[in-house]
Structure formats: structure tokens, C-alpha cells
Length: 310
Image (tube, rainbow, N blue to C red):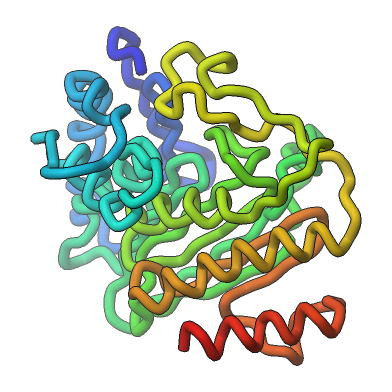
């Protein structure tokens, strides 16, 4: 993270705001009365300008594994640490929840009377505000390898959509996978998580994506520190390329990720997860009737997992 560069703000043609500062690239949409929106936008912008420097001040602590008492003081840093704390039995740093935690911090300015709904999208990790009886629809784009300039110009075709209603506990959405902007230990093209907060969704998506994994020499991995000097993962090997794999291996990896997701759901850490790998998909919401074309043994695996973690 570099704090010296200038924060930038622009209004997009459709009325949404675009905030940019260093590694942070944020899109904000909101609906409500003009006075409330104006105040919320101004508050969010003023807060945004301070965030990068605030995080840089505690960056060394944020790159260390979560363990023991919380060592950070800033509100976003504390949110990052708290979101990752449930996973401290394995290696995780607060950086696993940075994007969702920043989005959540900016959303605070929109949770006020006069604003019907708002969403803060920080690189695909989204914090959501919904007033009573409001809802929001989000798209699922499962594989970044398919993204190209033509889609950017003519519109993105999503792989699926989901609706979040105000009656739902979901207020955060996050996606992780080996093709994303952050490192992953697994082979998932994407894992999308819906949770009570964006910070919780962000941390859980990273954990579940890491679990979508197999031991296969054709998967290319490298120590994170060789790819990025200041990587918080140090010498831990991360995935940099996944070849086309046999269907049974893909299903094995997805089943491992689903097992992790179901445990997190039972612990109340997530609401829903959608796992995608090489055009195959599993979800914590799936039943044996809607698991696409999975073979019989995977239906049996899913049923057993649900019985174990019900």
C-alpha cells in the first residue's frame, strides 16, 4: 500500500460514484432523497481520503497472522482482524478481509434515514444497506478468464443472479479464487459468499476458496513472496495456473470446499456460498435435485455433508 498518491473521485454516467486511491477502486450506488444522498456521498468521500494512510500506519501488524489479542487500533483494522479471528487455527492474516472491511466502513454513511438502499463495491466485495421492504439484485460472474474488452464495451453477461431482501440477514457479498486480484491456495475459479457483513464475507470467501483444492502436480504453485515482495503469505505456495482437469478431480476439490462452507454456515459465519471450478458449480443452497450434472457419488457426498453439519 502506498499512501502518497492522491485520492480521486468521479461521478459515472449512471450516477454512481467512483473512488480511487492506490489499490482501492470503489463504486458506490445509492437511492434516496437528495439531501440524504448528498450528505452521505460527502461523508463517504471525506472518510475515503483518510483510509489508505490509516491502514498503512498499521500495515506491519495487518500482515502478521491472526493470533492472541487484537494488536491493531484503527476501526477498519479492527474489523479486518475480527472477521479473520474465527479462522486463526490455520494461517490467516487480517488482509484477507481488507476489501470487505473498507467497503463496510464507507457504507456507514448511507445507513441513515432518507436512503432506501446503497451498495459499496470494493473490487467485487460489496457492503449493502437496505431500508425496510427494499431489495437489491447482484450478478455472479464466475470466471475472470472469460472477461474481455468486448464485454466491457457491450455489457457483461453474468452467470447467475441473486436477490437480497431487507428481511434477509445478508449485508455483505465477496468473491475469491485463484484468478482474482488476491492470492489463493486453491483451484476455485471463484467462490462467492453471502454473509451478515462484507468483512465476514471477504474472510470466508478466502478460506473456502483455499479449501477448493487437490494435490496434483499439474497445478502450478509458487511461494507468494516470489510473486510479490511484501506478500502477507510469505513463503506459502499460492496457485498461479490450473490446467484443464478431469471431472472427478474438479468434483473432489469442490466437495472439499463445500465441506468447509457447510461448517462455516453451521457456525453462523456465512449465509450462502457458491463454488465454481472449471464450469462446475456447487452451492450450500443446492439440493440433490439442482446440483446440475454432478454424478451420483457427488449427490451422495453432498447429502452426507448436509447430514453432518445440519
